[in-house]
Length: 143
Image 1: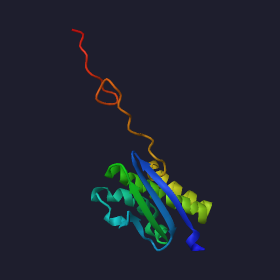
Image 2: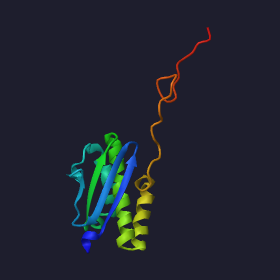
Image 3: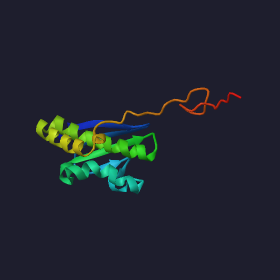
Image 4: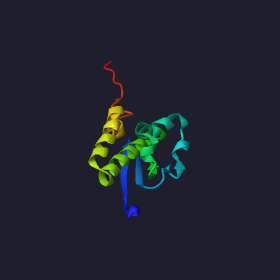
């Protein structure tokens, strides 16, 4: 029965996509097979830990989370991971625990940073002709 209990969520930032698979377990959180506290770059490690630190380790103690992440740069990947992780705990509570605990978790995360549950819609704008980028144009002089 416990083997059936899992949720799959995703997080996106720019071109990075992280997919989190959360199931009943014993508190292991891995990103591409690496434990969460060894995620590189070390400077952004706290960003990934935010959902866990906000909710407390005991909230994650009974779950295993496997996260696959690909695409984008390393900062975008970090943000995609934290989004997927935060969304997975909310969804797991909604699906298998109860509405009250889901709302409680969601409020804690939302109060801290909306970016933990809502994806950032900004994307790269395509380049157009007549210049070297999306908005820049070739200079012209009227002499």
